[in-house]
Length: 402
Ligand code: NDP
Image 1 (cartoon, rainbow, N blue to C red):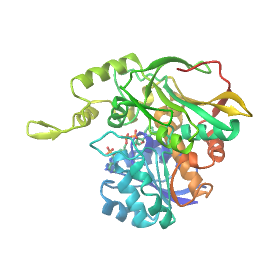
Image 2 (cartoon, rainbow, N blue to C red; image 1 turned 45 degrees about the horizontal axis):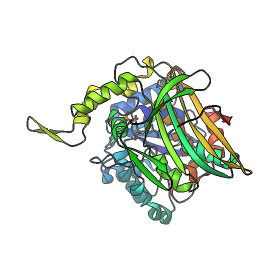
Image 3 (spheres, rainbow, N blue to C red; image 1 turned 180 degrees about the horizontal axis):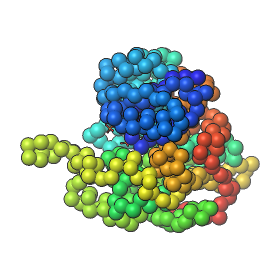
């Protein structure tokens, strides 16, 4: 039984708070803090109504370490679940070190002025967390998060050595808008407009964004989608922790309308991350664009369809080549029915809750900074089945990827 402090009251924050609230025997007290406290209060009201559980709320600027330290000292949680934005990772880690509490996040640190998606800044905290006897769990969402677990699970149970990895993220959901993003628009657009990098023969190879695509038919009737190769942060940690990987790629599905809008917005400079001067005021185009787009946390009631996210792993078992596809399918409307949220926030928020549960219960608790695949996947995978993200394994699938 532990008290947790959740920071960030967006789409993901809403789901983590609901899911933690469903487990009072693990998360005995919950405090939800964010920049805009009214958003925390709205989530607390939902939970009061649906679960008759009281969640405390607070206001905090997570860019400000002294403010965070004051809040953490006041709340005295066992750990902080960081579901604010990647820009706040380091300040929250600093505050956790100063106050002696454990840390978890769902996305790696990114400086505001460069879309880099690298673990180097957070890995540099390894010694500090180890010395303080504290744990920092990095990337406990779906991708990264569940995808790291799928890879680790396949490597542990199906292979002697793994050689190739393809992570495939399909969102077959339709929200009815010509253009909207399913999670924070700024982070989403920075991610998909970044140059593509994939792992091949011992190093990362860079290619232009969205320059390679193929068709992929999801299992269990989810349908056929165009998937595009892009860089995603778990490729960095997985290729480090599985050095036998010869090739590792990440693929994501995009609809034609999304890509057409993105191309035009990019061409006119609306996706830029450098500040420009507008009538004497500095504005960052992508931040202005975010204000114009639908708030992802409002997409829940209108999104219909399913997500299908999984990992295709190839390698050797008992001297023979084999391949395994580990995947999870989630229906957007089922998520809305349970926690008033669409499946992208749901599939991120549930693994964040499970990662926190692994730490609170001591199953995974150990000092240092860890990526998910460095920990035993079995208890996590069991909990995915238990708490809303049941997965399947397909051995030697018939499809072939590029
Ligand atoms: P949202 O933009 O919906 O929510 C972010 C929240 O963080 C908002 O409540 C925002 O406050 C708050 N916030 C931002 N800056 C600060 C600050 N300085 N101090 C305090 N609070 C702040 O994002 P999402 O919920 O969609 O995403 C949350 C995180 O999850 C992101 O890091 C994202 O990258 C990650 N993610 C990970 C995925 C995975 O599978 N691993 C998938 C999807 C998302 P305000 O309301 O005032 O703006």
